[in-house]
Image 1: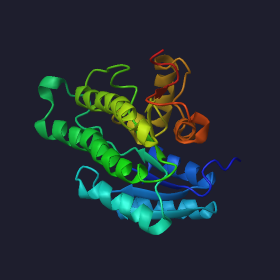
Image 2 (image 1 turned 135 degrees about the vertical axis):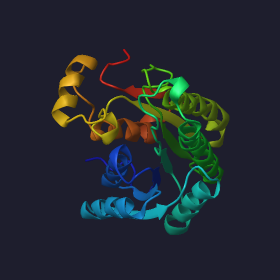
Image 3 (image 1 turned 30 degrees about the vertical axis):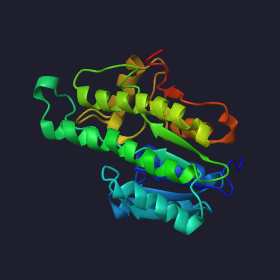
Image 4 (image 1 turned 180 degrees about the vertical axis):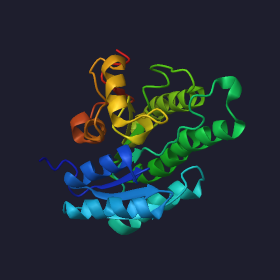
Length: 255
């Protein structure tokens, strides 16, 4: 085990489950002190417990990233508790109105995806950059986009695709704006991953596995750990010259 993040503080949004929890645990295993964020306290407390079980240090903070005071409070909590913010992973996101064509998608679902998936990332970036640009060694930010967006589209996911395409573009724009400030920004775009979002309604794990054998060249979903490994690479000094990248982790489905 390497310790690429020893002495560093990381913030992970949407860390109560799935990819967010996996990233938080992976960062802690490599020495980071991790602030885990989300809307509900119970899942975050479980993530912190798991971090503690593997010898790490975590702090749970509830916040709504779609409101400006949410990301600001997260950054403040990280700095107040640990003294800096060195890594941020903007993972919080939702998929609403799944399976509905554009003409059938409700305005509420559309707005919720834009509010959390796009505005939430923007507000988080703004708060994180404001802190990192004051630090001698700056910081690294990884946004979680999706293979659904700029890389591919699927029927019934238009709102989600639009929101995640925006994350990809926002990542590149912010990367160019702030690399001179010492803030390095990239994105990871996961494909089907071993989380609840990869199931179709009513689908079993066996059913998903059978579907993946024909839908994904790799023949399976990516594991949460595989996606987390990509995030940690981009956040680490190993990727010191990687700026504005959008790393697709999708088993070859958009190759």
